[in-house]
Each structure stands twice: as C-alpha cells, then as structure tokens.
Image (cartoon, rainbow, N blue to C red; front, side, top):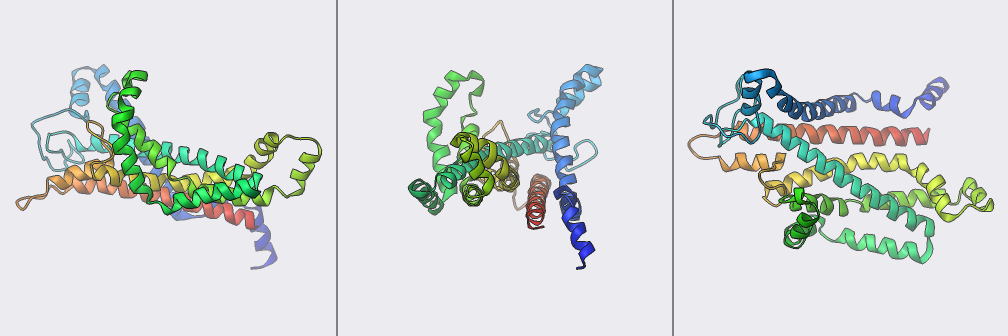
Length: 320
C-alpha cells in the first residue's frame, strides 16, 4: 500500500467504510424493506375500510386474527404466504410477528445498552475495589446459563407480576410475559457491553483532557457525562446493533418452545412452532414453516451483517 492509499484510507469516514461493504449494504436494504413492510402493512389495514366495501373486505380478509374457511391454502396471488389451520392469512401474521420480534430485539438491546454502559462506566472510572467487586459480579453472571435464568424469570414472575401490572396498566392485561421477556433478555445481555465499556473508560480516564477537566474543578458526574460517555457512545451503539439479533434469536427460540410470546400475539418463533404442529405423514404444509423461517433468517442475517460492518468500520477508523 503506497502513501496515497494510506492518506485516502485515513480520510474515509466510517460511513464510507460501511458503504464499501457490499454485504452490509445488502443487509441494510433487506432490513429497511422488512421494517418498511412492518410499518406500512398495519397502516394499510387500518385505512382500507375508508375505501368502501372492497376496502372493508380487504381489511377483514388480511387481518391477522380473522378466521375463515380457507384453511391450509397454499401460497397464491390472494394469499402470498398461504393460510394456516384457522384460515388466517399467513403473510399478515408473519408481518405482525416480525414486528413483535423486532420490538423485543430493539427494546431488550436498549435495556442491555443502558445497563452495560452505566455499569462499565462506573466500574472503569471508579477503579480499585469498586471496579473489582463490580467485575466479579459480571464474572458470576457470565458463569450462569443466561437462557435458563430467563426461562425461570419469565415463567415464575408472570403469576406474581401479572395482577399488579394489570392494576397499574389495565391495557397490559395478558401481556405480562411479553414485558418480562423483554426485561429478562435485556437484563442478561449487557455483560459483554459492560466489559467493553469498562476497558474503554480505563484507557480514557488517564488521558490529558480528563486531567485538565479535573484541574479545572469539574465534578465526577460532569467528567463522566461530558467527557467519558460521549467518547464511548459510538462503540456502545455499534455493540448494541450486535445485541439486537442475539435477542431476536433468543426470543424466537423461547417462543418456539412455547415459553415466549403467547397467543393471540405471535412472533416468528411461535409461527414456526405452529407450522411444525401441522406436520403429518399425509401432507406437509411447507409454507407454514418455510415462510416465517425465511423471514426470520433474512432478519437475523441482515442484522448481523449491519452490526458486523458497523463494528469493522468503527475499528478501522479508530486504527487509522
């Protein structure tokens, strides 16, 4: 590599490095399409009745909970993904299930982001005994089987939290497991984030600009929120994007086992489980498994491609 190429690489922004990664761009386009459909399809069903009887018929036919006599219809022009055992349009159910999976992934990752950044920042900045105690707690949590703990948390807390949550928020009736699933997955996904942020804070707190802030009389909270966190936020956001597909995968796995999202709500994992239930020696209704499975695969691959490319672009930019 000659000098001109080195200078050119140094001038390239993180966005430019990301755009140069073709698989990542393909993943970003796929992710944008999925999110666009998840947002626009429910809106289309909401406004369809405003366009007369045909619009009303469209909204009824493609409502994800609308029962019909068209059970086990193969994919066609009318039903793009076919229908399920109750005659419900599978495309609509996959769209809503994708929305649920994305919501759980983003919200759970946001919880892990907040806990991980706060924990890692405090541990790294405080140092000494506080740092040792906090990181030993992280080591203990690392040694625990996280997915098992989440299963126990979700299944046992529902009976204790459900009534109290419904009393506070009446609209949350029947959604206790949904909320506990998000909290449980988020609460056990922050450990890697905390270690990364701690390492960054340890390297930052001894730099001259932090010493200058201390000399000028800046408080610890001001140093953390004005100097430390802004300098680690970029790395934290990148690793947040990597946490989203992991949480989506865990949620789909738990829902497939019947321990996650419960009816009438649906996620991609529960839709695949419903398809598996219909497997029999006489006929296999392949679309009940292939369609939600393909969407789940596309979602996970696109999220991982975007996350990996973002991390690589950031690390390359830091090295140059």
